[in-house]
Length: 301
Picture 1: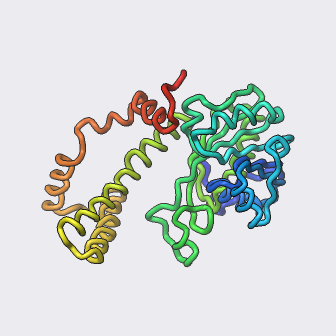
Picture 2 (picture 1 turned 135 degrees about the horizontal axis):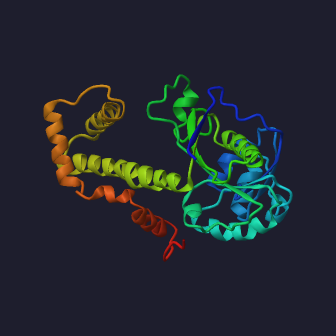
Picture 3 (picture 1 turned 45 degrees about the vertical axis):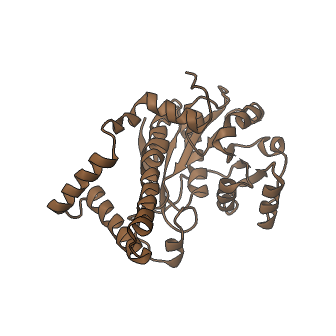
């Protein structure tokens, strides 16, 4: 089922405090989500294997405990570890989780590839931040500075929770959403989709397409400056302004492009984009890119 939970007040469902364990709490994402969760009403435990990660946590006043101690009795276990080790970490963590608890991962690739350890009495959720929109209205310096999200700028989240809609499971999803809203906060809307749909969003839509185009823009800027010889300040100013216009015209329909611009756009598509590029939205291509990302030979169904 695909649903959307909107909450302009940025407060999650009304749930009682729960025990949350963050595994990988000293890593890049672990530090981000732990920082926000530490300010919540929930009881937190943090696990981190790397000495450098333990140091980073200690510098912010958080103490690492062994993974088995963090997971013991936890209602929600957040795996904030790299995609390539999610399967192995889940194999160690899931058997130790209490019945009815929730395993929450931050990226859909491992869930889509069926790498996560399964237990009938442990629920699984995946939640990935959208990051603050390029069209977000920002009014404070802190919002302007927060490009990633999770600090001051409002963002949305897309999440998956593929379990039967029983009262118990829906209550568990509310608990998961409350934790998700806190760790990625401030959050406006949580969109609930399937794991497969979330995988088509990340990586296909946003990494395979959007991030690739961002990298292509950087390369085009380099060529404009270093091959053509345009002063970098002028080239950068022209590019950044026109990226904004390109996005607002195409994604919001703000203004039509001129006839000459449309001709240049057609030339760019003919020259740069392959005719069969939309194949990336097929299931086979999704499997292909995720096996490459996770360094797998294949995805077992």
